[in-house]
Image (tube, rainbow, N blue to C red; front, side):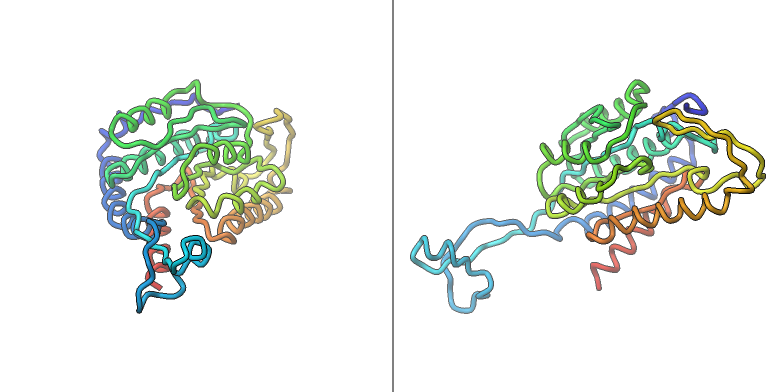
Length: 299
């Protein structure tokens, strides 16, 4: 099914001046904005203390007060560090390219760059590669050791290929990932099962989830040259010939409708979402998302 051999070699790519410069810029932007956008934005329960005159009455815990026979208020403290987990789609549909770079390769470079930036910020990072099950699981932890484990799994070609089930992956991840974690879902979101968005609603109270949709130009529109093309379902293997002249407008409209639906499923429950294309650099869309989120926080 893939149009070219999967070749994910992240370390050699860093020697390329353009990618190295891009990574440096992304790291600096993320380091500054990440701290403001995600860190210090939450509070966690630290314990109780006796109510004193002038305390905010809304902080009184009446249940605890009745049990203790005195008026108690809840004390909260800011938390400053996060577990950041990258849930990366490695199913069959990610093994496609019309540009010379597979979606899986693009996704791996994206995950690699974000992992490095967040490790620099002092956060725990982890990785899950998924198809219709979790292929590999690296729980979030600190230090360069976990970073090198993540890189090793990203470049392992045997991890790639298979069916797709995002809901199973989300349910499994939620069984071991701590609350307040940030989850980046990197996928083309092709092959979603009916009702998948309900799982986002379930998890929104526990995690900050950001969807990064990676799509090839052919996922969005047919070739402008027209003519007949053989297309194949990445999961069933079913093939059919179509005439691009006849179906190009309908295809573009349907893919646009699908993308809008996926985006709205995230944004309806106040989760982040970014559209990415394999023929375009991911740096600017990521920074645009960060700026937009920053403006919402500042009001």
